[in-house]
Length: 203
Image 1 (spheres, rainbow, N blue to C red):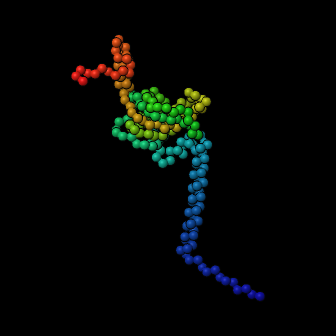
Image 2: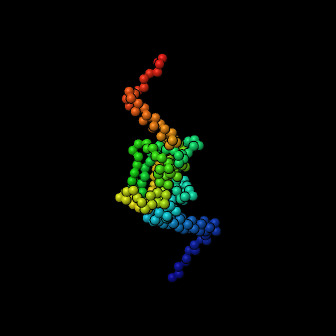
């Protein structure tokens, strides 16, 4: 008994080309996903250097010459930026790489720009009024081995800060205003603290 085979019709060259291109694209995508997954895992579980190397490739992240990394969340206004001679009024939240918060302001907090860790100071001096950023501060620009609270912040921690710059002014101006306020409180017979000043003549 003979069986007549039905021949498979030949595949057109254009169809074959599309098929091979599809296979090549699938292989490339699989490789890319594998690479991304590996890079992400290294960033999450690797050391600080591995995390920072991965983090600086993310959209919007800028790395400065010192190694500080930051991303602008909300742009500020104007051209002026704080200097070491200023006091900055800020809202902030500080966390570790795993997201655990170790410090946060409960209300707008004045901080001398030159009186905080190096990385935080550098971040403030990059900001404009009204700006909000996220900054990644490596241990060399943070507390290093000298953690102020090892229970919340292990030595050599990479610090992640969300910072909002509300206002800033020269520290000398702030000190002068504080001195004037103290002098007014020391004047005998002066108005009690918090009292409204007497009306000016003619009012």
